[in-house]
Length: 445
Image 1 (tube, rainbow, N blue to C red):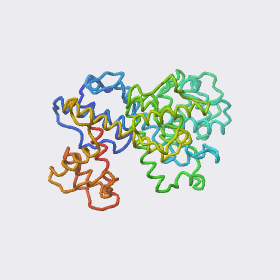
Image 2: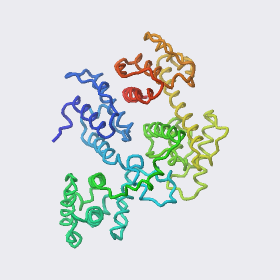
Image 3: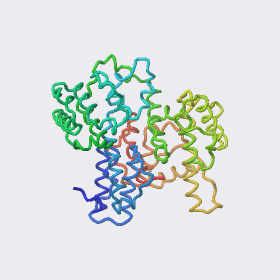
Image 4: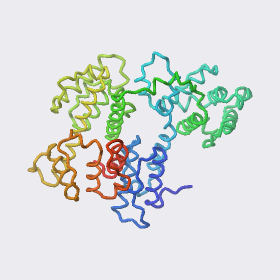
């Protein structure tokens, strides 16, 4: 058994490898200090990298810091590890990885609503889909009390693997005996036994979720009809760009530590509540919570009230919202939502820079502008001996990614592997943008 209180250097290496298993390529091994004996700064750097990488893949790390990892506080460390494992187990529960999941929904279903489902809700949807086909009369709403008697599992395995599911399992009256038989049948599908019959009968939510996710990975029982999954595989260039932006904004919002967890930005912001939470984080005290309605929201006008308050606060913060109204958010106008989110993120970043300016220059220091950021970036690259330069944030030459790589290298040389950098104009930025991800996780705001 792993003693998490022993060896903080080992802890950082263990977490980094676990994160890369959950979401491959999240952490660049070169960013980890691997010396046998680390000084406090190097140790803190490793732990900071792990925590921010965990945050980037969707873990909630609001109540855990680097010192908690150093001290090996069991409940916090194990809580973080369980989140990472859960993300890995549910990694395939989306239409991109498993387009056959479209089978779970009616043809009339709005594809945006499908995309907005969390992996856990998608897993429940998948389970109930097969239970209904197998003749199970109940609806499973959770992975604890609704599966304690093992009956739902017996029906699920009967639907997915009838060759391994004798009728005796359903005829068994004792829940623990039934749970034992269910686990034996699951093992025949190569599902490793990570839980005991008692874990099922006691309703251990995390272990039961992991069990169902493992069954899904080994036999999902979904169709491979290409006609049915075409809808999930067609995308225009604008769709691709919006998908990238959605991911960036989703990661940023989740990294703020807001109470709500965002699965799909374009769907989850439509009731206005998440945007109010974000505004309260970047501009504390700006939200009048007495006038806000918390989800679930059944009345459409309550959603509009939330979104109207978002617009009102945005205007107070001097955002450019000429063509954006609260109803545009409710209706899910993606391009206008992106415009709002971009301004929110920019406001948050400028806040950070001005805090740094205040600490270095005092209250008399000049407020940082876009021009200051531009000049800093160009001077940093020039000082490193390179000749690249950006004229503006809309400079088309930025599209190949070279300037950003040179800037990253100027700030921290080891984050860029120049052996794999090419001068091509296609694919370069996406191929090497991982350097940016690793840098931002190493040095958070």
